[in-house]
Image 1 (cartoon, rainbow, N blue to C red):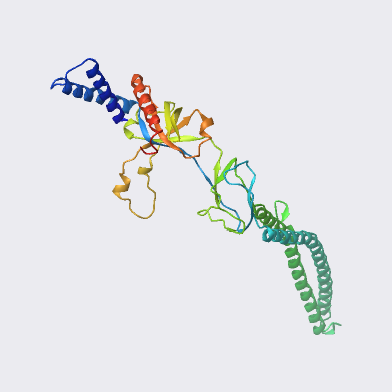
Image 2 (image 1 turned 90 degrees about the vertical axis):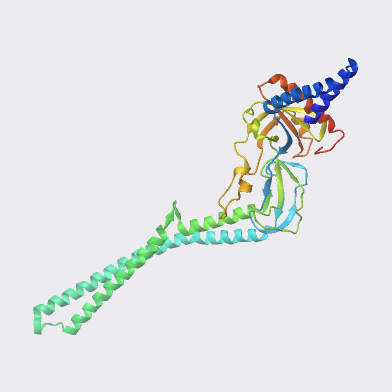
Length: 381
């Protein structure tokens, strides 16, 4: 753009010299050159600082990597490349046979566990009856033992009960006491198994319910759907491929249907002038001779050149102090033609601030001249 301004001034000087027939001598030519240096230099300083321009501008968009949640063979690909789809539309399907089998197994195990609950209740009632029977047996043997013991003490040597008979009654009583202890322990075990619950559900049943829900979720994930409105481009997945849930290797890239923003890389010396809401204009290499109006949406608050993360290695000064540009997001007004262009088109951008607004006309003229050159030259001229 600086060259265009110089050439324009040169053309004006030549026209003035020709029209007014000014002689070319040691005074007129140096005066024109010196005047051009002062004039163009002052205009360039005011224009570049107050109305910054970037020859690096491009549409920035986000893609969603599509990864399956389960591993399996791709059964069918339902989406067509470069075709709009709605949220929830099927992208591709994975063979559901092994996942359906797991669901069937978990349902059978859950049904079996649910039937075990009334069985545990019945076992608990049986254990209670066993405890009551053991208590009665204990009480009966205890009464017999105490009767023999009293009779032995009262009768002495003349007692009708021998020492051996007393010892037998004692052993029967101790055996019944041990049986009661065992019955009580069994009752406690069955009671704990029956009353073991979480959120009012038997723990084993709840565990199998969770396993069934996980199996049903895996079965649902065999049908991969569009996360939002958008399209899939450069579709390379085919039936017969093995889909593996590896985040670093997505099966396809999904471009969501979102508002399109353009990002321009501006020199840092204009940061004090750039702010949200400033008027902006862009030319696109794909649309020669046309200027798109817009506004500054945001001046990015951070620059990648100053970023570093812990990696266990020291950062080099060359990387940390590399020069960089600040990124400015621009929202263009004409969405109709933008949606006819592929995402990621490039161009050039200019921002017009409120300072020295009368100089902005120069930037607008130069930007339009640059746009006209796109009819002849390709990207990067």
